[in-house]
Length: 462
Image (tube, rainbow, N blue to C red; front, top):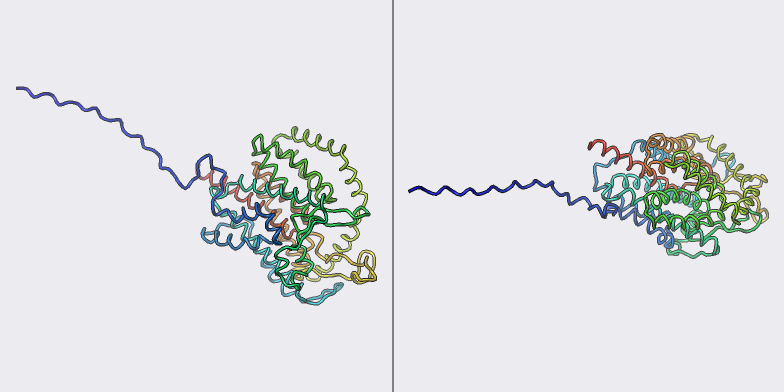
């Protein structure tokens, strides 16, 4: 009896080995959504109108530096960008300059008082907070904070600035007492420097054209801060909402830029206008489509020249009333800084006389004798008197080094960030960087650093 042959069971095909799923990485449709660690910078950029209404404004970065420090501490070891040692030296020099707060250099007047110490401590708090902010942004992963998300958040702040600028044009007298202003004692809140930061106003009324005219400043500290800030924010707005935007974002971008032209012109801000001209020239030189950019610029220029706004620009250029004041304070600042070139004097000082008279300061019988404090005509001049020529050199070296280091980055973010670094070197002559402007400068620096680090990581992965 023969046994039946055993049945042959067909072998199953081998299972395909699937790659492990990394649940820590966002799915494709969420690739531009920020993680929980990014909430402090989101609170600053997206919540800026709330901070302004509360009275914090640009000083909110000091408040948010606390949670940024907590997030940063959990990401040890902490990375730092190349060249950041210059910023650390700048901060160390500012600490040393406190030893000179009580000094009264030749040509100045005023004793050591609470206002001088308060101004020093506020600037110190801002400098430290900005150092923390840069390290915080650079140590967040790109999954936690995608580059495009951060750029678009800056674009949202641009829209906020445009809305504030229009408010300054249409309702220049709008102002109110903030909760922070009500909470502070009068000896703090009444300090002119502090009051500018905590008292929300829509515009500054100035006689630039020979008559009272509003210069928009909301939601920033003063009119010049609005000019510096919006010229930086418009760069990131174009990148986030046009370069990386779809059809709807691009339509919104065109409408927003058209609306922004009104407060930009009414700001009577020559530094802002020069900065926009430099940005346009930079786009023509380094843009991916220079012919298209040139055509768009030509159409925009023609539309502007045919509009009533061009007459306002002409009036402003014919009335350079601030030139004499600036020339006096800049010359006096350089002269005083030369007497303490290494550490400066820790804070601003009041000088004898003005560009019109040798009488000391503004008074009831000489209202034309006043002038801004020495060091208030630009970040460079503030550094000269507060930290000497050494501090000014460190500041210039930091941002000039960033231009040199990141010039080769040809991505839209790389080219935009490099442009901002160039504008910083221009604006330091005419604009005070504290508080909001310097914050935006260093966010732009952090974007450049993150972009370079990402490119390096991708190169190593290959």
